[in-house]
Image 1 (cartoon, rainbow, N blue to C red):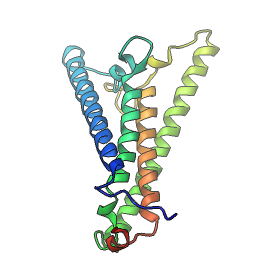
Image 2 (image 1 turned 180 degrees about the vertical axis):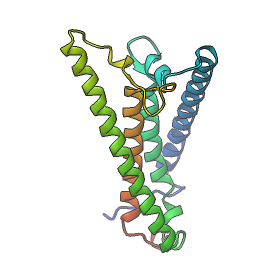
Image 3 (image 1 turned 90 degrees about the vertical axis):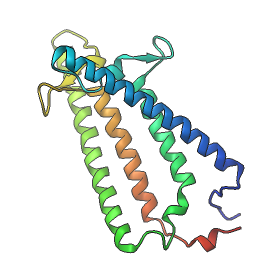
Image 4 (image 1 turned 90 degrees about the horizontal axis):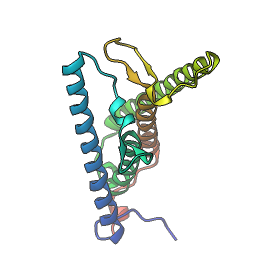
Length: 190
């Protein structure tokens, strides 16, 4: 049986579409909450820790899932839904070869940068955990930060690792999809 692309008339199409809407709502809600919390912390203290509120807040109850985990999940699932329902926008004839080449280079660049950031954040996180253990303290990994590139705006290492991992997965998957042979819309009509 030949693999068929999802059509608007398929029942699965609406499932992917509705799941995407739920993921988009989750992403927007978490981002708005994080931006608001970061703004209020900046107004009160003159500094903030990027992503700290997303790592500290657990939803729907204590010891369940942190907001950064919900954001991670919603981004990955939302991207998969978009890649399933948006395939017609990248068929042959819709994007020229020059634009596709530039898009592929951009996606490859994003994937490499995000992979570097994931490895860097994870390495710094492990180094801080190890340094804490050597000193006789087991650090709270949710509180570990790095004051780079700006000491007034440090990044929470759990947040940076997860958010750049999302960026890597999405850009690498998009790059993979962009290198697959594209067919014309006529090949997919039923």
